[in-house]
Length: 138
Image (tube, rainbow, N blue to C red; front, side):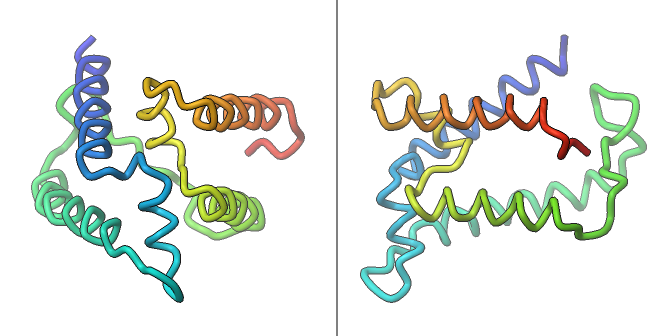
């Protein structure tokens, strides 16, 4: 139960942070990616602002034997870069760079009633379901 509560709190904080920093606005992201035009550095400051407390947190996390509400840390065992990782990253990057929305801000923006966001999230879910039934599973 504590894992669910912790996830809810962390997800809510993330969503609130995205909303306050206006990272749910695709124009902000597209402005950041437009380095040859009217570049908007806001995303850089948001990422930098997130990295500082996370860096401090990792200092303490490394000293723990296990997470507070789990028996062990869930650390990925896969350590190499393969074609699936490259293709998946490229698809994510093209989608993000084309419309300026990634999954976190999209889910956060669902409550706005924006039809484009609803289409994006529906398409994202369809892609996830297609992957589940595809031969490309890990």
